[in-house]
Image 1: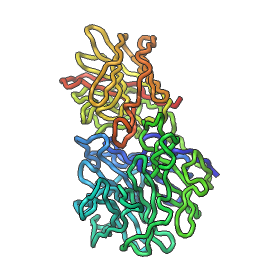
Image 2 (image 1 turned 120 degrees about the vertical axis):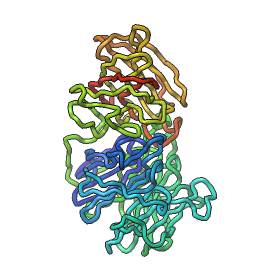
Image 3 (image 1 turned 30 degrees about the vertical axis):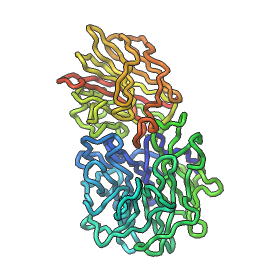
Image 4 (image 1 turned 90 degrees about the horizontal axis):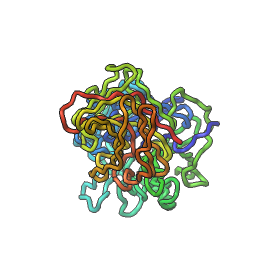
Length: 516
């Protein structure tokens, strides 16, 4: 037996999808407008996970120019069939629904196979039937006309794997379990016993989120809903419950007859979610031909026992990320906005340092600024970075706590006269406000962000002296409930010339994240 602790992936890891290949489990998540896209994780026991890489790790796979941070990649699905891994997803900003394939989950992954106008809508999934045929299922607007916001349907069509194109007729198979349902989404089909099962989410990704199930003996006919639908939700528990917004699940078995579901949910603090949606695990039992999630409990558990042998990794996903820059390859955990390329950074210019170039692009613009961050995973945490930076006029570099381009907290070094200044700047709904300005010394500077339950303090350390730059900073403006969108916060290194020509740079020695 092994103990799994929820969430199994903490922080901004939404829309989880899972598959099993032999004894190995692989999970993927939405990445929206962050680059690289679709992180992929590996486990042998469903409790401990390592990051195997990022599936969309090349620019040809992930065009994101001009995207809002909550656009880009939605709801990937991963499947394994006959020695090949398939990942299908939607780039809502560029190209729509597409598939990539690989012989190994860590890659390399193929170029994108775009499915074109025939594959309308979002949240695509693949189902491989026992006769070798593959079927696409997804969601699309009501073809008879959308009567209200979220008036969509779930549909299916055969996919020609040789041509990577949809073939034959498409058919709507389900609308959702409840009357006037909104946003039936995240559909997955499974063949279990004599039935095809359709698992899907409905009610939107917020307080009314839920999981419903339908089944049919034939794929191309209207499915029948489970009489207990929705089979899982936290919407009846209220906004003060520790885990909210539960839904968007994917089933997996362990090869020994035991079933599980991976799903998203959020952990709020002061009724606000800074980490977006995270990945949670639950048990599934089958009663009268229908799934029961966490039987006898009916809600997500803090932990669960799994009848698999414990399997640990050297670099497991944890609540501590310590990044140093001695390699010539960026860490898989580091995220850029829209892209991550050597116009923004260099790992070779100075050994042991990550050099960020002060380009014109600014963090408050909807563009690919010089920013590399890591996910927030807790409400009590500390982020540190050390940098050397000699600013010219109007240039800035430092640390950013980032929700989106209109809502973030900048902690940056700038020049003022002959002095170096350290500013803490809140940027809320597109408007910047300087919280504090502190004169600092030269040379290596360490910036420290300490957060505790939606309040934060910022420290700056130079020439051996640490100063409190700002305290009691309100972090609620950087939550999903205040800022909107579908992502969680990241914290990372940043440099900009703020619209002016520059050949300058900032050298970062480390970036660390720790739960406290």
